Length: 410
Image (cartoon, rainbow, N blue to C red; front, side, top):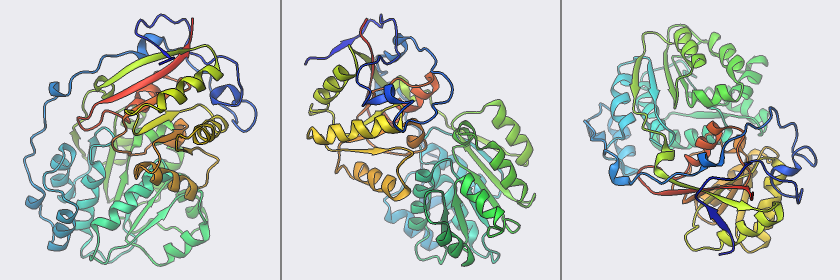
């Protein structure tokens, strides 16, 4: 192969070079990239190199329960069994009994550990007999994650006469207003659109019995803290609050102290996923060379489900179009796509109708995409934390994964 992988980490810079402005981060200030916010932090290339820890080194979690052991009604048990669920994951095994008991719970878990079912199943069970609607509010950081939660809710609640409404930006607000007037049991949404509907006095939270904050750390990263505070203060103080996050930061601790009542902490957070991901750098001369290398790599047989990260909306779309035109089926997700376009692209990738998904960091937050074989950082991330979050999309649930990061040739 014509590309060079460097295991020494000796390159002097991890910032993209100039070259062809059509692709990646180089065109960010023009042509639709928008304001890129704070300057990119320098990350030494050696931090992009890691030999993966063998899967055998991980201790397999032994569940104390089977799903059949949980005190669910017959229909809910049937719905769980029909999805092929028998043994709970660690977060499900430990959190479900506390949630059924009505306790406030802090769930510390990595993305992709089954936490959605950990809160949905007991919430569905506890809905029986509740007459005031809506009574459950579930907040998520992104439209895609909210959509995934809604899809799972519909699967688990089949035959139970329970209804949900999805409240996210990027889709028609009038339809959401109509849906709310039908008084669903559960509202699943993103903070911005929820706040909009509260301002219009269409969304009333005074009868809520349950609040779920999913991926709380991501919501705070994305600047949603003021919206979250405003939304929660409109809810009854007497309620059950479930709080899921991969990390506990000082801001999250402050939220927990303010809004949760004597919470139980369930921590099943494993070591950083990156330890189980084979990581390496690829040197390139310039943007055009980078495109050539990437295209050649993606023709390889083992690149069967690849997530490529770019820095700007404009660059991501151009890169995806280029790959598509080169005979490598590719779709893009970024902020200039509307919700239905994003959902369609994500479904094509999940269903493996295309092998490559090109995305910006913001668009990819909260996505739960199974079986990603490779993460490729076409543009280096803003921070090392963003890097960890990116490459955490591969090497999940005991599978092996690989991550490549492009850097400048020295």
